[in-house]
Length: 261
Image 1: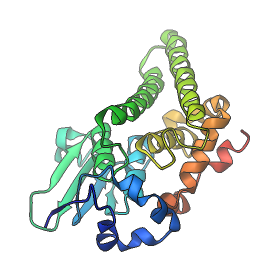
Image 2 (image 1 turned 90 degrees about the vertical axis):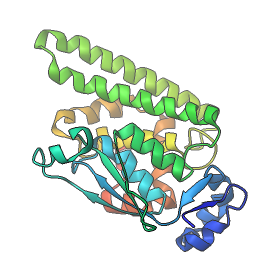
Image 3 (image 1 turned 180 degrees about the vertical axis):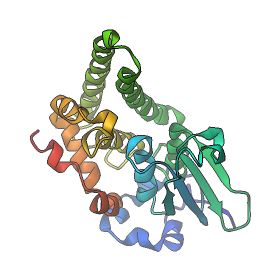
Image 4 (image 1 turned 135 degrees about the vertical axis):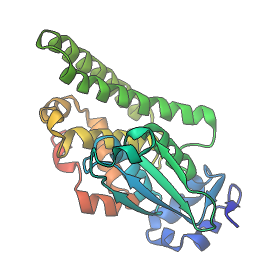
């Protein structure tokens, strides 16, 4: 069968995903985490297309890694491959099903992230609880867009645009820090398990702090100065999760960038 209903029987995952028992952490939270999944395509594999930078692709890389699915990445030659992409832009996610059903091809970073997060249980099944996490992701995106905006304005407008970015960043830090405190300052924004909100926030920090793109070259000092102890703990907690062990081992972690907090 292509899809299996696992809402009431999460331990079926052990049959289809034997590597879920690689860590005791997986066993501990499997019932709670995977109750968010209504159906799952057990034969799916993925190709993720994006530039070889963190940018708007890091959250998807983290989600696919945490989901323990079969996926690979392509870095299309740009702009040569631009006409071959949906809407002529990246990122793009291609989902292959071994049963012969048509591939799913989607674009837009937010759409891709939400699809993977919902499919593999990193967003709550309840729409209200999911919305609480999704709004945080959109706020993170607003801050990124505000930062890039200063590259397209005149010198005379640059200070005002920069001030807007700093204001949005300050508000984001305040909201995230308060949520982390209300959740017991356990390194998670919601509950006690890795979530879409955690991964989105961690990806945001990686974009600005680790090997930023040339247009973000002055961002590490600015963002690092704004970090609170609560957000620093989230970064360390997320990358210590066994689900992301392979990713952090390959690409490096944030601990060295936030340890001063």
